[in-house]
Image 1 (cartoon, rainbow, N blue to C red):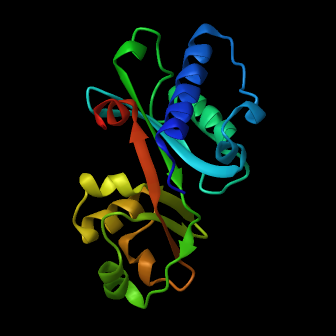
Image 2: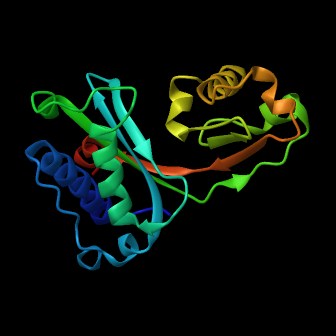
Length: 192
């Protein structure tokens, strides 16, 4: 789903309010019925935090199970305070923290025959989910900016899932692809 400018503003403001409430110990989920109509529908999102361009937290949902506005709210809280890779966001960090929201399409299975075929089918603009009985991981489409080589992207995704590179040739492996409408406060400020 591609959102309009006002819907994007609403989701970014929701994420900001969630984190600011968490920092003050006053978490008040928004009333979904007060959000624009499309944001009341079930949706899947990721919220990414960056400080000085470096990742500071990123948590999300791959499946649409709750109203999109609530999904963004909960994922903002989780990215700020529950990402296991980072300590909880401290109040003094917040002023320099940048927010990005990604609204995901439904992940669809990607049919492929072996690693070489998969490598030829993936590329920028695609988010990927790697599923195997021993691990699962995803990379948002934005990760292609830092891992533009398909081999490195797929190897890193397997590593993130705790799996060996040969996992892509295992018949138990599933790879799903999705797209994301990603936007930040800076994007909205710079857009005409």
